[in-house]
Image 1 (tube, rainbow, N blue to C red):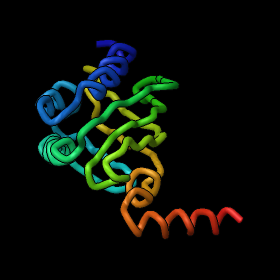
Image 2: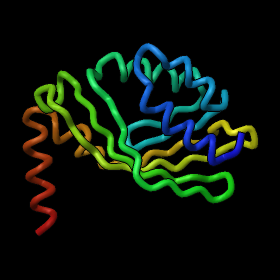
Image 3: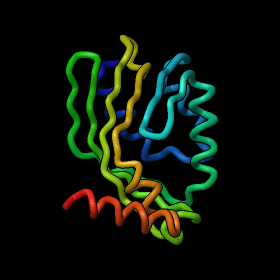
Length: 144
């Protein structure tokens, strides 16, 4: 599989990913995948599947809008906006967060390293009652 095709398949897969199809991770990632984001470090496909199973169990809606895609050799960068709803965040209303994924592809088109960059405050902390107010106040204060 070409890396261009693998990158497009990766993006398409994530827009279909939910609690009913996390077994599809085995088609996208290597067994020893290393995944990280501002909140987690996960090693291995089984641990990644458990992470997504737990996450999608609690999310009522989830969709990605993909923007720029840059592929250079075996490394890709994809910018995106995640739109999701979680019953305990933001009163269950839709939350939108911009981010970027750095992906490393193996020769056969599987991802063996996946790192996400996003504002964890905008995704999580700002949307928790009481804590969200404090985080937003701190952000405003730091911007002065």
